[in-house]
Length: 145
Image (cartoon, rainbow, N blue to C red; front, top):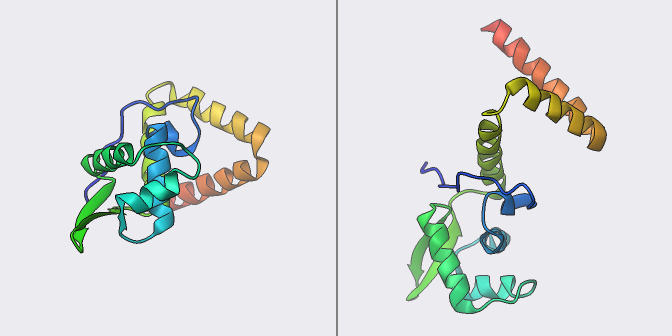
């Protein structure tokens, strides 16, 4: 599988996809995933414009940038260009999350781990429990090797 090309920096003040994509790129990708089938630029534009005022030509430009970033593939159907995602949303989220973690670990690993535990404890104790379960399972797996 050809891996997507993401920007090398994360936008800390953004949410969701916009952390690793531009705001409009994130909206376009979400529209492509919701379509769940090859879709023309007009179809994607019609979905994006519901929540974000943007011209069709701008959406076409973003779609082509996403093709260059290997997030979308382009094909011709009945003489029109259609776009489909190369990965499911879940696959992309897993890939992007891993890239973000790899980047964050460029800081002090101990401080990053402690910060992750602190933030989860404050904001999502259930996720902290899940992290604990995952850590224990991975440690057990490594011992068995």
